[in-house]
Structure formats: C-alpha cells, structure tokens
Length: 207
Image (cartoon, rainbow, N blue to C red):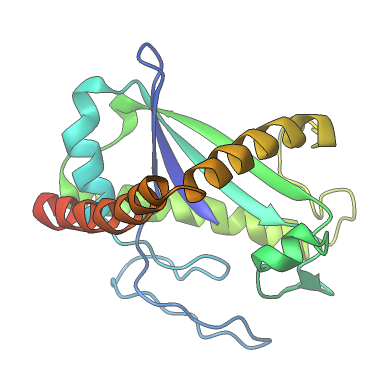
C-alpha cells in the first residue's frame, strides 16, 4: 500500500495522498505486467501511478510544505513461498491473520520534487520503481536475512491494548451518545452524506 504523506512541520499539518493507479491486476502466479507510458519501467508489485491528483495536491500546498514522506506498507504473512497474495481484509487483519505490518518511510525535501507535471510523472514513477525493488527484495530475496524486512534501520513497535483501548472507548462512547438521540442521529447521517458529497465536489473542482 504505497502512498505519500505531505507534512508541514510548523503547522503540524499532514495530508495523505494515495496516487491513483491505471489498472488493478489481480495478484496471480503469472501476473500481467504492463505500463501505459512508453519508456517507463514495468512494475511487478505496485501499480503504475497516475500523476494528476498528486500534482494538484502538491501544486496547491507547496507554499505551506516542508517535505513529502514516501510511505510503503507491507502486511506480513500475505505471501506464499515468496509469491505475494491478496492483502488482508479488515476482518482478517483484526483476527490477527496478519501478524506484522512493515512500514518504510522516506523523507523527500520539497525542493527535490519537480513542479512541472510531466517531470513529476517521471519522478513519481521512479519513486514507485524504488518501492517495487524493495518489495521484490522483501518477498523474493535469496538471503533469508534480507527477506521479509525493509532496508535500513528498523524500529520494532508493539501495539498493546493500553494504547488502543482508551481511544476505542472514547470513540465508542461519543458515537453511542450521538446515536441515542434524534438530533445526534440526524447530525451523524448528514455529516456522512453531505461531507462525502462536498469532498467529491471539491476534488472534482480542483482537478
């Protein structure tokens, strides 16, 4: 699951942008590999990214940003003898069918990001080539020490019940309290419906 996080440190503002993809090819033992742009490398484990949404987000926010964080997430346990399989569903994840999540973060300074759309397209594809090479190494490395891990320094973090229970209780309490009253239910439904519509309209206008 590759995506970009655009961060403005002084304002503590974080925008997560998941680049669009041209096609979703079902994972299989003999995957179909192709790219819609001549001259760009064919990617094996990630899909070819589209540029428009990323370019619009960066162009609108570039004066307020310090850096982009390139994040790659891998769910351990979703491979079969080095062959990648489907990512876990939410149910599978919550039932611990995925024992670990590996997260690789790469900080990219704003000045290193091309502003012209065509140059950014090639730059974004090159970033995904780096992701693809990391994933090939992660799944298929002949060296057991390098398999199922990302390059560089690793930090192991366990997600304990102490970290998740308080936020779950607060969120559950607020949601339950809202849904127990007519006004709360209307607010909940209207926020979900109109918030979604306004978000889609805003993206359409800016695109």
